[in-house]
Length: 226
Image (cartoon, rainbow, N blue to C red; front, side, top):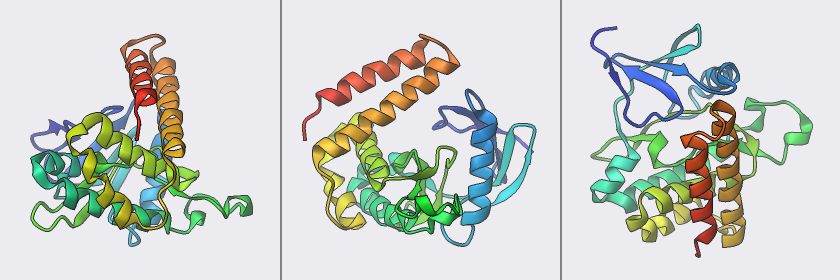
């Protein structure tokens, strides 16, 4: 690689790029499992969804081809909340329509969908002129589950990190389509995810700053009203 720079929106891993490739080194609990999950999914999703191209995997590091685009959260804060969230809604509908066999052939999972696990504008790269998706990134927490997990987490990202754009969430839900799960169901899914992230951070560094932060975020989430 040439001159490398860290990606400013990476949180659980060390991610750097040089304009040609991106190298993602997994850190924290279950790092090997999370790398394997993302590697396998990117292989299987190629051609079905806009995902970064695989270039290789070695010693805890996944190498991906660089994809142009701007993280949706940056465009959202630049005044394009409606367009960004509308694109995210349509994209999430496509993700949830993927055959669940992409992760499991178990018949008992037939009523589940492919859940991204950390879905929101922060993990969607967009063309800043057309708002078309260039890539969906960070699949390490993907699993089969209930659609509300991703729906609620995208809403959580907006409420927590972009509260001034909360009113634009209607564009997200309308683009996704169907009935919006009731608020208490969505809030419950948010709290479940906050708890799992607290557990993740507490395993990594017991009672450390990450665990404390997720306790505080859970308390804030519990106080929200629709």
